[in-house]
Image (cartoon, rainbow, N blue to C red; front, side, top):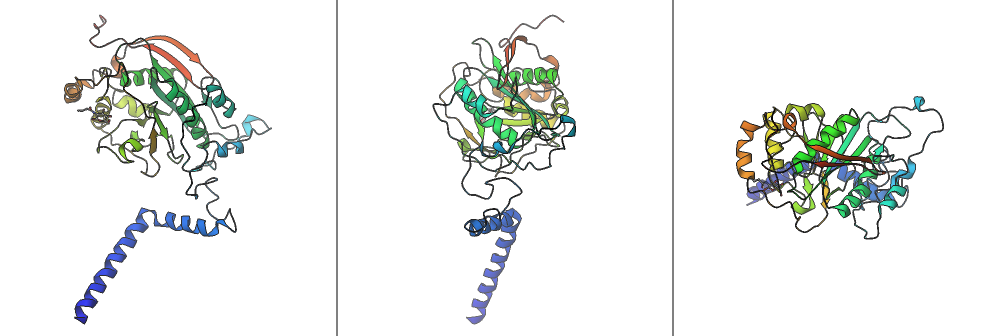
Length: 358
Ligand code: BGN
């Protein structure tokens, strides 16, 4: 009896040890410092984690605009600016995402005094080593766009990036084509600036944590890995929809994105296949950081499910080298540098367009 009891006790202790080791690997230290943070809260508010911003150690998500008042324009000349630190001191971790009905574009302009025409920004107090363009395909989603801009600007400023925001607006009423609009966005944005990272961003996805850094990785990055709609986990392993990021080199290596997915679905899966065909892997942020809230909306007219998506996807291996950046055709209708973004209006044609004679 006594021997059996001892054996159980030993087994129990072993299990405890394994659990503790696992917890340690999964950021046990972070959790410990969080608890110490709570302990210290009453006495010395700055005792825990001053290095990374105002409320990183608080369990309460903060205001996305909270740290921006710390950005100050130095009075001396621009040449003397130091390099921005490796980790931005303006980061605050999770922030609150709500959708106030009274918000106007004008409010957003006022809250972002350092954003210049075309939705451009560079830190006024240091030289950023990152140049990120955010490309957002769009049609008839003005309300979503307003909320995305409200959060995106302070989010990127907290990361001390040199950035620009591009809205690619599909003209006309023909079926929506997300991937082709992204190709147009890439081409037009690169004409303006030598961006080193492109973020391809759905208009209805709001990031919830500024430690989800909008810079590129060694491999194409899928950033929206924990969306509220999918209960903060991936819907399936190769999912590449929502928000992704590629360097221009990675993008060209896979001949950009497909041009022939008209309507909802499949184009993101095609892009994931292209990443592999281009000889690359998929990089992802931590599931704690790659969190997004989706703005709820009804069915989009003009973006019905694409019945051809299964056939197209089955052929990607044979078509990717002919269809993509090297076959992209469109008509640029307008380019406006608005206060919060560059607005690109484009005619991308329609399905089964007759090919131009070459
Ligand atoms: C998948 C869609 C994706 C979409 C995700 C999440 C297809 C192709 C089927 C062969 N893929 O099912 O495009 O992003 O769901 O909604 O429909």
